[in-house]
Length: 305
Image (cartoon, rainbow, N blue to C red; front, side, top):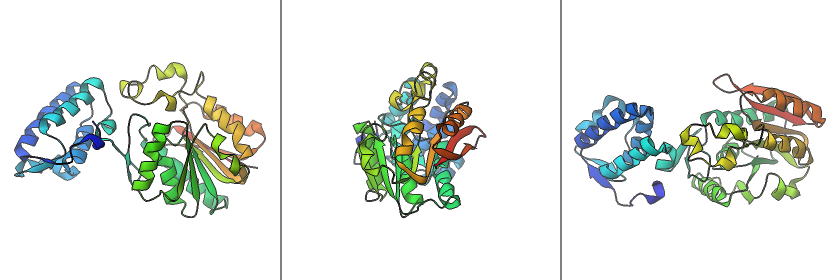
């Protein structure tokens, strides 16, 4: 059940009844090794409770709390998290990323906090290398539209072109862009990587992508939340995980203008291979590797000669 499936009329429950359910849900979470913070996320989305009320348990004294579904339905949802390992973002239909609340479905990868840094790196690149601030930027493999929306928000005078091969993902991305007020700033295209963007050859100021980069054999070892529920199309990067990144290294020079930004997210341990690809290609300069907040080399950036 996602937000779209929640009843339009709200349910009401006493704070005491909800508190009793929460206490049992916490016990079940511990037994299933699910972080309690995920229960808090669920209650913030479905009961409108804030972090302080949840931490202090002050909601227990409220005569009534407005829920988007009944306590029994809430419990069934939570049991799906515990037993089927469905990510809480899919259960609520919402993922929080940067300053945005994004709609997510199993058709799109859940945007991760580390990916937020791609936007900051793009902004820094534009400032430090005098990249054309009023030109066209692309988000290849847009998924939920998170990166495209982040770019549109941070790069005020740009037009963003977002591409995905999945029509289901594009429907989610378009809805997110419209809901957040960026519908007129982002153009969406269905296709593989650069294919729908022939008209932009030599004109792109920046390419940003979080492509599939997990080796095929490693995908099968991922935690069940990812393996069973997130789209493998957005995860599987081929034998060594570098198929898509290799393609972007090869094809981007045809589209990027001189000085244009090439920026991707990658898997830990791939940084040397990606840097070598960029340096040996002959079309890029100033190749740089950046770490994520955990200190893991996660991003590769280069500029078109």
